Image 1 (cartoon, one colour):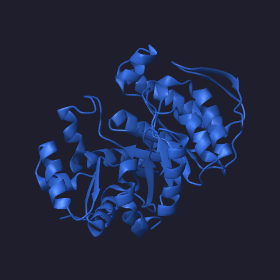
Image 2 (image 1 turned 90 degrees about the vertical axis):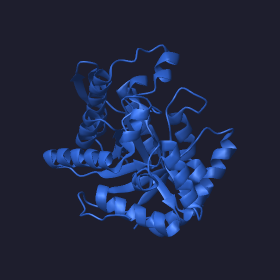
Image 3 (image 1 turned 180 degrees about the vertical axis):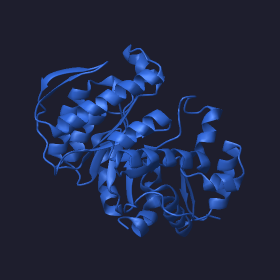
Length: 318
């Protein structure tokens, strides 16, 4: 079923993270992170939307004291914060967690975030240009003791980051996206590149379906690789699951998914963010997708933790 191909990027060991949903109480989170540690997951992340979830950065400060997992944002919306203030928050979380914080950042895409805050949602080209300047500022602040900056969207005068960063705790930067401009920025600035469907039509638009096909992911990964060659860099590649089922009823489940998406069952099986099968099959899917696309870092949703745990046990760190 799975055609193997030569590796196109250096392969990293597998690691697995969980995107937490909104919690009813902090006790819920403590129970979840304790389970994730026990089951071998390595990372826990929080989203950044103006909805019924806790604010990510302050929540991660709390979790830093409650778990030895790597903590991170998946992802901060760039337009909602000044990048230098975000760098201060990131540096503080890096220090509090002793180097276990990863800063995921994106250009922003959810219209309701902007409307609720009364912020104009500029065209994507403007939001992506702002993201570029933010990444320049954040990266520079991690590396230089004091600097000034003058851009089209941001200014800085003799800025000095506190707490200052040492090499052992500097946060990894994750940049996710599905369009060529964001992916090019990710290849230039990020330590982790998250390959996603483009959401320019909206999260649930029918046009987004085409972004789930393996051909689309291959094009995006090839673009990133070309940019990495140009910049003489290497990065870890991340994929966030869209559908996960690990169990014996996988044939029934994939038929339901394929009917929902309006595609053939085999096409649904082959979509990179779809992980459906028994334990052995999902393990094989992940191994092939690392070889073919370079994906070694995978995120799943909180509801899939228990069923996915045997896969983590089989592949984590390998």
